[in-house]
Image (cartoon, rainbow, N blue to C red; front, top):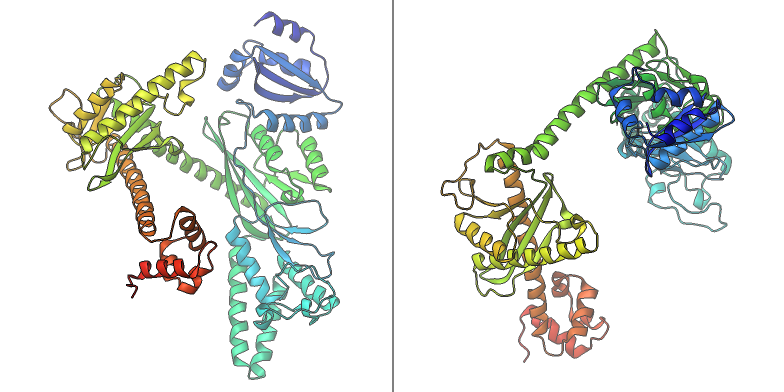
Length: 621
């Protein structure tokens, strides 16, 4: 402990507030306390039984700041804001920035719409949700419009203008208030029924459809009866899907946390109007050894940032840290009482157990995915380094390929993988300038020579300026260069690299047997087809081939277009640009008539006829 820390610990006040643990300018951790003196001193007391995470954090702390508050609620609000601002490494952070879809209805309007929105506002409108995905919302909206024909257009009604009803009115999906087909009171009565459906009172909608279907059948309107029958089935199917549980109705969320010693997973289940809308899981990194009540508290502080997300009741798998203070904060956001409870038995406890089961399953799947991702990326680079005899770590891999058509428009591609993952912003193309004809060996030699000469010069320049060479365009040199081909291609590439003054590890991958060749080694390396190292080599090789041939096709298409238009008398650069800007593609240009060509700026009848004849192979008499 340094002198600054020792002095500050002696002068800590016995007051509620927040503390920020620092290492230089970096904020390592933000916390709150009812008594700052007692809480902050605990971090630096030996034998206090801290977790490994806390011990690691304390070992880095060089200083701390405090911010005093009047109440514990103020400290909780300040802590939440500081965590969002600084995103400290050792805090429990909710990194999933998910925007849930909602259904919005502004009943204060004369003829309101039922809208799909991603954000809620305190605008007096009523919001339904959250729904777990846009598909769920659109499914509900499509069904609502069939049962309750409310308008979907954005016309500002009433506007005092007569409008012709649109197709939605013709097919029975709109009451056409724009055309005066419905009064305000009748429209709001239909809206009231739709809102009751959205609130979970779906029995009314089912009964209404059944009555309408019976009336249509009795009136011998069989086509209409069939349509109503299909709507009834759709409603019953949607209700069956949503009504997974209905313990007493009401709106609430159920939260549970699962931990594995490293990370934590929080599962949230949304119940609105007694219907389960679904659930979602959130991974909290480095929270596996934290107190589960503290994990849930941190999650709720970061998740419930909008009033529309907060239900009147939140059920948790176990008591949260300072439930009264947290409930007071959520109530302030919601604008009415928000209760936090941990039921021990009954239907709601069954729902909590279901959430816990889902959290445990989601955490296990995440760990499996993380393991598979590691084996595919970092694990594969480590395996490849071992296979080809590299002592160091392979951080940056570069792979090169050549593409041309009988030697014309020859291009080289440079594809970059960082830690086993594509870094597409660092991909580069090289137009081959010094090689004539289809000579892939010489083309590869030119591309690598240019790459490394440029890279070494840029690296020296950035180092002299005190800049990080890994952030330059070419100054970040590879830990391994991969060439598409056999030992001959490898020899040319290595010679080009050495001539440029670089000596990075290099190998090649021959496609026929997927052999790996190394310089100065006659025998190739054959890896198992399931080896992650070989699969990584194949991915970067295939990506380099794709990148090269895509760019080559683009250049070839541009040249063909340019050549065809250049051959037409009277069509210079300005008219070429005008034609391509107007028609966008050559197919559209070929499909145009001579009259349509004359409408292009800068074109006249004579040049339009010349273009038309050239496009269609006509011979002018």
